[in-house]
Image (cartoon, helix red, strand yellow):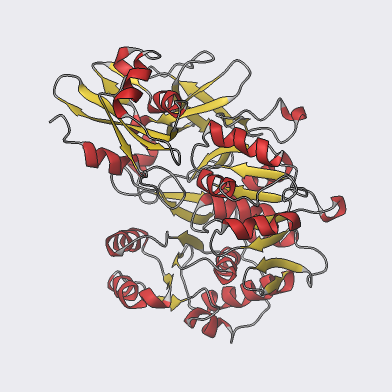
Amino acid sequence: MSHNLFAALRAAFPAALDGIAIETDSGLNYSWADLERGSAMMANLLQSLGLPDGARVAVQVEKSVEAVVLYLATLRAGYVFLPLNTAYQRAEIEYFIGNAEPAVVVCSSANFGWVSKIAFNAGTQNVFTLDDDRTGSLLARAAHCSDQHAAAIKQPDDLAAILYTSGTTGRSKGAMLSHGNLLSNARVLKDYWGWRTPEQGGDVLIHALPIFHVHGLFIAIHGALINGSKMIWLNKFDPKRVIEKLPEATVFMGVPTLYVRLLAETGLSRDACRNMRLFISGSAPLLIDTFHEWTARTGHTILERYGMSETAMLTSNPYQISQGGERRGGTVGFALPGVSLRVQGEDGQSLPAGDIGGIQVKGPNVFQGYWRMPEKTAEEFTDDGYFKTGDVGKIDGDGYITIVGRSKDLIISGGYNVYPAEVEGYINELPGVAESALIGVPHPDFGEVGVAVVIAKPGAVLDAGGIIAALKAQLANFKIPKQCFVVNELPRNTMGKVQKNLLRDEYKDLFV
């Protein structure tokens, strides 16, 4: 029996393949037959290249339906998909290609000159181009291939994808995800989030995320495909366009930044959301103000969840009350069915409810390890098979999980542990504060101290000294930032996460 992820997704396609699978913002529609035939032709092209078993296909292209078809074709042919952030520059691409040694590299035509040079120097034999206007050498070559293809036989532990982590500490690591990892997660989320079959009225997903990341590539696309659901496809996020399409959709997935931008639009209303069933947020913490404002404006409660490159989704707030309770802002809900999650102290002991510690997980969705890093892989797993996520959090008496921060973000000041998310929570509740980031920087006396970097709400004027004074009335002295800076914006990556490593670098010499 084959466990090829593509075969499972394909089995969920509607019986009638002439219906619309993906509706694009350019006015072009793709049928289920288009996905079937297109992925077959590209799979045949890949197989015609004589690639070795387990060959990697590295892809750095702009978002397009054709890029999704390439992903499906890679799974179908039994190779390993390696998506690369479109923001990566020469040195980063050189590292990824050198580390992964892909047999095939696909890039945009604009970058072909320098990417192909890096690829050929690293020993890659095949470099193709693919652009978001349905052009490129990949499509030209695939056009001559058969549109019939039998999916490769794969086992659950066979690799399907390698995702490189962001690399905020040291070199990026390639998380190896198998067909079994991704398929188990897709099936669990289909049930847990109540995806409706066509017989139940069907779901329509607005896809406005990048597709080089777990959120947009796996959670969103797998969710729609394994349910046979139509996608409304936006190559770029446009809040006005999303609001225009909301009445035609039922599901939307976004990062917190997208929800903030949607709330800034006057067109967002309960009427615009009248047919929506579910709004999901992840990839970065959602501010509690955004959570409440969304409910007030739309009548919908955002469902927050938690996942990572190494595991896909781990936890989720409940879709319905029968799953254990309401959706609580500031939490990421409960561990998903089949996932075991625990919070442990530094001594390796499980902690009581409410205590903060390291989050560890085990389940069929947890990755196979880091590419060509056996020592690092062994280091990140416990003796009883739990993966150390590197995230710090707590579980309350009702079982709701709250992420407090990353262990690498922990500030140890004068021997005391300071958890940035806790302090940020107090800062964010102060009048006029839109968002904050607390970072640790070197200090000659305390070893490390906290520095707060804050942005104001539109029209508000903030006083850095006043923020620190307000915190002194609420928090223990060792948690109080030694300095506060009010800035216009915080540095973010493409998924909306604040890049604290850049802030630490900017302020590292404050007390030296």
